Amino acid sequence: MNHPDLALFPLRFGREESQVVGAFHYRSHNPWLSNFRVVLRKGALALIMPSGEEEPLVPLCDGVFRVGEEERYPERIRFDTILNGQAVHANLSCGDYYGIFTP
Image (tube, rainbow, N blue to C red):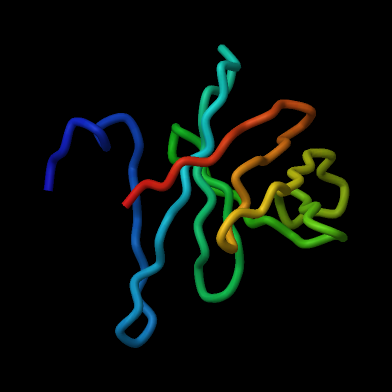
């Protein structure tokens, strides 16, 4: 289905039994990286950039994740401000992003 709200970003869904995996879209006024998505796939989080590039999020401690599987990767993302079980704030490499739900 083509929809103008989804035209700039590929959105993929996986299915496990009868459950569909949802997606959250984090936005910022950062001119270099205005948004990204975090999805749950087979029990693991993944970060998806607007270009469609995807990296796994590797848990480190207390809501902090490494972006990418390689231990040498410096990028970190921290989730906090939990509301109804969802993080509404993410800090990616010192940039603040705020979550909005996307279907």
